[in-house]
Image 1 (cartoon, one colour):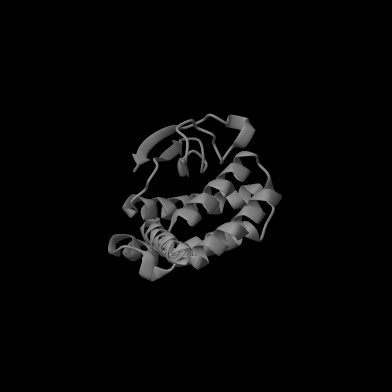
Image 2 (cartoon, rainbow, N blue to C red):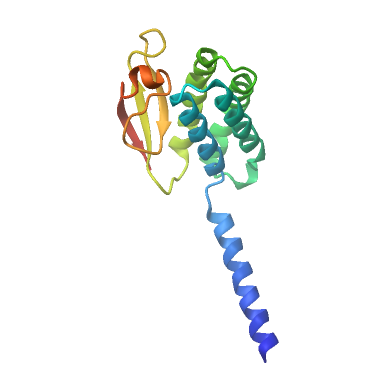
Length: 166
């Protein structure tokens, strides 16, 4: 009798974990790695940014196309090569200004993907008007408070939330 209960308990756990795995957002690991990269840029740490970008590249490469819903899949296919290219460039240098240049494009493409993804928590799309030689640039954050990855401590709070993705 104990072995039957143990078997059923194991079966229920297996099915539950499988359901959770299927419903989890497949781009969440990419978002998590992106946020770690953004935080390294906020610290103006080129070495850490390069390291976090390698993690991001790994997360991008592990996304399974079959796990994406149709809307996210379409956008993902359009921006995938650019996401990889920007992550590679950031990982290959410790020069923060160059990393930040690629982070602008990376952020634009991440926004496009996350705009279509069903997110379980809010993600804040933020904007700094001073970045990009006064043309402005955006980034994504898990917190409403602005921490500017383009200027770090120089202008940490320069910017505003322009959209909340959910």
